Image: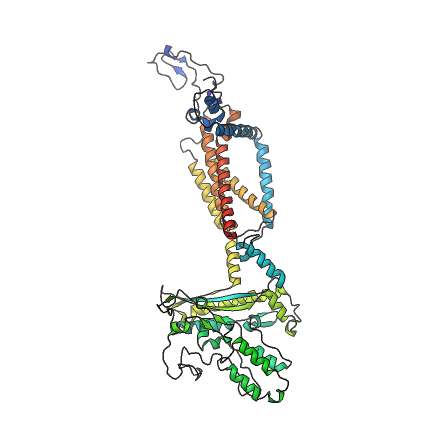
Length: 590
């Protein structure tokens, strides 16, 4: 066994080895104070116990020793793996010895570096933009979005405000008149939302995305068309006359020489156009482009508006006589009316597919709707860039230094008020008690992500305190307080906490934005992965205390035994995370 050069097999210094222990009388007991038998002969203290791990797990304790045994033909094993492990153990042993010799310096420099990185947390930023969080960096979708942004400008396009209605009773059919009436009331309340900003009252008509109307050189005619053309609202109510109540306008549009004011509830565009041709514009017929307006109405599919659509409540005094069920007073087959979707006032451009206005549908053999579990209405608003362009030449905003940023502030404030009004009515309205009604908007999504991304100091502190208690109790030796490792466990958890903060601070210095996973998952995930190695190191160090390993080599020996396992665990975790990132990237490309 002369080749087993591990320190565990070195003779204990300043001790005498008994050559022939059989000379001692077997009946003579050995006292605990070092004297033997009744003659009180002085006995040599027993040497420290040999390292049993080296006998049972030689490659884990000292791969070089195990490799030498294989070379001599006394054992078998994977020599390539042992050579790599032996090289790593050699470096780890020297590193541990260096740390033990310069413990104070290493601790000071390490804490100084970690503290420096922790300062980087001051520059941390949260990313709550859905597109930046979910769109693959460098992918096709990002390129298309960048192209649209470079062509139309940032903030162009539109945003959707959604009202979703479901029954509180799971699986209940929502294709009922009272459900649609409740939906109508909610949408009407939402469409009347107003906010006050920059000393100006902003309502839906000022912010919404509406169809383009033809323009003329006659100012009051342009105003009539502008007031009559409503906001684009995708709703199941467009299958019925009641959909006209959502379009407004809030105040009737007065058309000279054509009697009372006009709303979409009473508007028949074809008749209105005929009256305009033969009425107050008769004197202007020589220069007014009637043919252009007529051609525009034909191409858009603007005909009778909502006047020939069935009424949900045929007893409504405003229900037009031209409604199919006005005189019969028959109950509607709502499923049949919604089958195939609904049409807005411009039938050739405003066709809302049924899967956009109803959800959880069930059809019969002929393809007609017989059941639905949800109703959905979508109100379209302008993007901040479009809103800025729409209002920049209007005298209303000339005194408020009109910018894209102010347009964005107004849109966000209106969207927030929109969600609040829908929530209030859904909780207080008598007709909504049987339904869940939720409002969703782009701003609401951003607010949810922002709130969820906020760091909860209380939760993080509670998690780390519980881990401190667990480490202290699990490593505490109740019967041997001197050799207890609870202090090592507490120090290890604190070091892991500082390391996590330093890692996040380093990411902030590099300009990496934080998100919900960074603030809600990473601190606890890193705590679990880091503390695991603390328990391994503490357990291994305890096993070396009473061994024959010299004092100056104990930390080196501990690190030599556990370091390879720690490195392997860390590399495995890294590979697992990187593999998942690569798999997600490949899936996005496909």
